[in-house]
Image 1 (tube, rainbow, N blue to C red):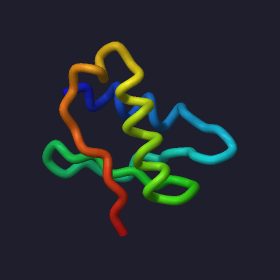
Image 2 (tube, rainbow, N blue to C red; image 1 turned 45 degrees about the horizontal axis):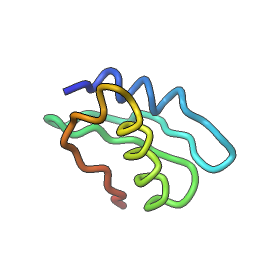
Image 3 (tube, rainbow, N blue to C red; image 1 turned 180 degrees about the horizontal axis):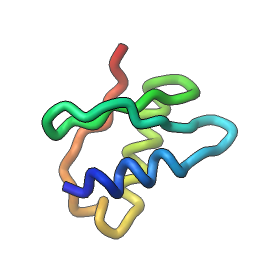
Length: 66
């Protein structure tokens, strides 16, 4: 999986609605803190990843957890 690329993509992304900060890795799961509403930030992260050349072929979940 493209974990380092995902971390870089999300941490470098920032706009008025969302920003992401890598927190930890557990197995193959990556955890991020975000600004903005959690469910919308998860959807935005998924769209950002899927918009990349390598992200179109990945099977993954982007979910909001408390």
